[in-house]
Figure 1 (cartoon, rainbow, N blue to C red):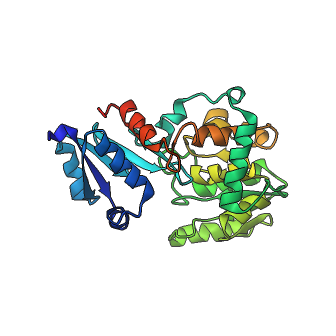
Figure 2: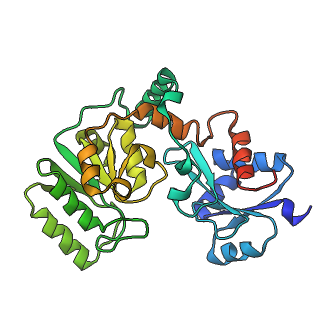
Figure 3: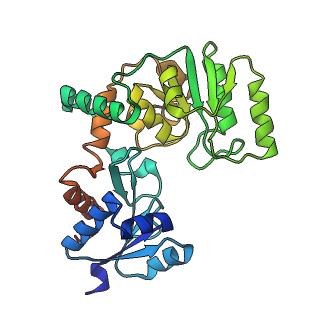
Length: 303
């Protein structure tokens, strides 16, 4: 078989083991679908050396949760909530296919979307209905605290200070990343923030915090998307693929984002349904394999 009719799938050691044992549902679908379309599939470790060599391979490469590094490579990753997945050619979420689409709530069946939204909220959080928030705002931190990452409009510490400035009444609950290792300067910055009478710093679990606040401020799209389960709006300090229903300061400015975040009515259920069911691959459905192949074709693969 020609190399051009071959796909190399690059996996970390843990995922590789699960796939080889037949215990990874989604990659089982990937392999079955690609081989069914006449492509030869090889599993490779995602070491730096193997990933670099993939550029010399004349077939296709599928990276797992890694930005594609050449024009025959695609990235596969969960669409925030499993079993929903996406396949992308872009390196940054702001350039993903769904990010460039227009969300029109008028085209979405309301009862179907509400049933879908309620089902996943109950399954993932145990909540039958979206709870009422409190007089608090959650600021979820991501990455270095004193340097702005690529795609972020401010440092994480500046993000907290902007929240305090533009929301002068609510309590500000700051949640650092649970696994983050901060420098002495970053720890000092957090300790300084904690002296503010309206600031609370916590490592509590995310869902209980989301249930207890009025809205979210973050540069982490995964946290903002999780908040949609509880009908929580978000002010985003970073670029995201799920930008359609969020207040992004890059688009509207800081003042307008904070002004509008709790004022606008938002079709949470319709957006949740549109983003996941209509614009990702649901590995729990019988059409997952065909949806996967369609996504590969969209990015130029001959499947």
